[in-house]
Length: 152
Image (cartoon, rainbow, N blue to C red; front, side, top):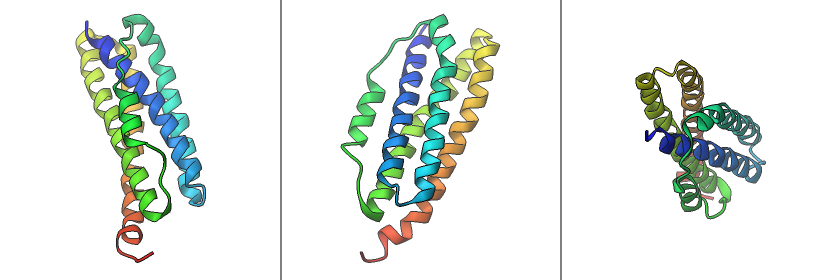
């Protein structure tokens, strides 16, 4: 069964996303909404990883290095200023999209395996990941005019 590959991918991706939310929230503390929302979303990602653990034990976990590579490719350190915030949020969005599609794929596998417990976890966590992506998209739209048009 190759479900172990995607469980490992998603489990690690959630952990990396939590770390990235914290890193960016802390770096952009001068934006109170960014700091507080990133902290809350990081805790949500930690919860997602925790909810996956029983299934990781049941199906095993192949732990591919992709999430760490994605994190290190996107984050060679946080950036400063308005454009830096926009780019950091953009990177978070890409990492969240990785989680989002992984939830979808695992949900399909859970249906095929008739694993109602995993389906319940996917349903809850997939909707929270979609909400994370919506916030990131909205916050990027808010930051873009200032960062891209107004001279610094």
